[in-house]
Length: 48
Length: 375
Image 1 (tube, rainbow over the protein chains, first blue to last red):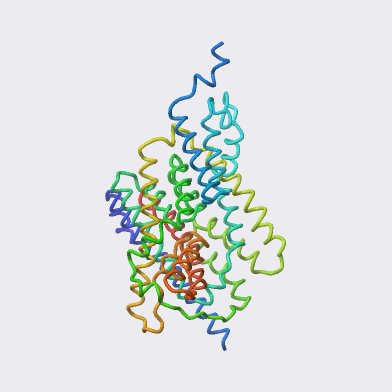
Image 2 (spheres, one colour):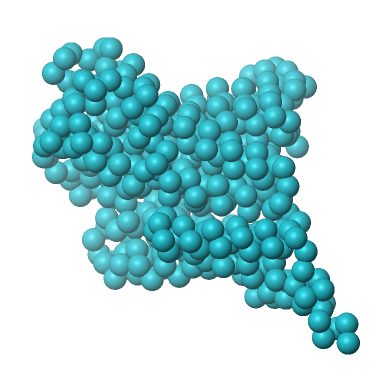
């Protein structure tokens, strides 16, 4: 991970933007997926 | 004698252009009713700050009232956070709890933020400024102001104006993009309505868990997420109804008023009238288009894996932007126009409140990731 960040630090701004975009987009999906699991689990728990 | 006429002699053509821009914003607010609570004070603030000598901003080293408001509420990010408390108190996550799958559209429709960021770097902006421009695609004024204030303070005015202007233009921007990417048949898809009520413990626990999660994933996003979720907790707790009402009304209106006129006050001709402002306004529009396209295309992708009777109306994907509740209303109107009696409003609102979540998480991640790469 540190190696990737070091590589991106020395890259041009467009490559850096692509790196931030990939990380950011994956991060948003992963975080909202966690909330989805939480809501789904609460729904299941509520039925039981 | 010259001092008597200093008001006349110090007017420049740039000031006159700014009066025109302020006038257009006021006209849009009054005549077209586009976000009048924001565009009206922004427009007036833009005129105020560009009057000769800019007394409202600063005079002979003494801050004027606009500068005092700017330092008190924008420079330290207080106003956007207070707005978030108000917005949180207004948001009902119930439609999302009834249709939890909608949460993913709140992620997909953040595509515009990231795509626009890349485009901005191609146009020559540095990463921090590009990130601030991309955040216009959050379709979320306070987040745009918050990020721009941290990364690109010189462009705060055009970024804020773009964010709020395009939010008000959602009914004009989204429909053609949706029509371009969907077939008539797809726009007529019906979705079943889930009537079940979500338990109160979930409504109370949700804002707390979201805040803690955001604090762990992107600690820098805590002010954004925390203030939004604090407002929501006030609403859902059910024990401080007066506070909830004050947050939704008096707090929201007062801070919106101050925020609007202060943003307008930051639109001095020297800072605002340049080529980059035009580029930022153009890229803001691109961000909204990419957002809409990202959400719709993601819905179409999901549909590939769903059985016929459970297919999603892909217009719902467009509601994953944070412009709440305007985007949901636009999509419901389109669904009704395609087929009378097709009600998808609840699902649309579920996606729309997810967009609010998605946009602040995206804002937080951008705030966390960009400083890792550039100082």
